[in-house]
Every structure is written in structure tokens, then in C-alpha cells.
Amino acid sequence: MNRCAAVVAALCVAALACPSQAQAQSPRKFTAQTLRGELIVTNPPEVLLNRQPARLAPGARIRGADNLLVLSGALVGRSAVVHYTFDTQGNLLDIWVLNAAERSNHPWPVTLQQAAGWAFNPDTQTWSRP
Image 1 (cartoon, rainbow, N blue to C red):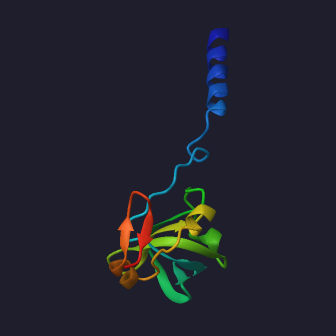
Image 2: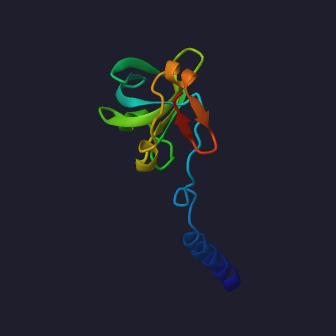
Image 3: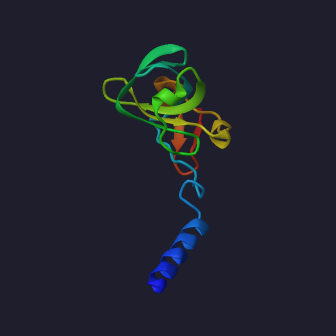
């Protein structure tokens, strides 16, 4: 019995000593369909995106600056700089609240028209204007 307790204790200590996935975060990868904007959650699923009314898609995923999932209710009334994608109905599907390093990555398109006219390098996560 003491042997089992010692093994369990050793495993607990090892688990605490290892960095979790949230702590050892790698840079997030975005696609060429990802746009940047300002999001204010008003009354979920209703939001303001770049000061225009928009709607969260059913099953929309919001990831915080630490890449953990965030409920839309936790963001009510707060303004956040985000990257986002749309579903086929034009609703917001994937939303990432940007951390300081991601916010400093300029330029980043804010409209579909800009994204269509700019070149995206997925390896460096940068956009270049023509």
C-alpha cells in the first residue's frame, strides 16, 4: 500500500513540475481567410464587429489571448482586438482575442477585399500589400 502511495505522490509531483500546454504556448497560426477587427459582445449571440452589428454562429469558438476557450458572456461590454473568420452564412465562427505580439503584427487585412488584394505568407504569418 505504501508503494502505491509513493508512486501516486511521485506522479503528482511530476505533473506539477511539467509545464502545461497553456504555459508552453507556441505562436498561433492563422489562415489567409482570417481578418482583424474590434469585437464588442453586446447581447450574445449579438456583437459589434468594427462598430457594425454582427452575429456569432451557432458553435462559434472564442479563444482568449492565452488560446483557451472563452464564453461570449465573459466578454460582454468589453472591447477586444481580434482575428476572426466567417461561416458560410456570414456569421462569426472562429474568434481569437489577440495577445500583444499578435496585435503588433502589421499590416493585417480588416476586410475581405483587402485580403483578396494582399499576399499572405503562412510560414511567417505576415501580409504584404501590392
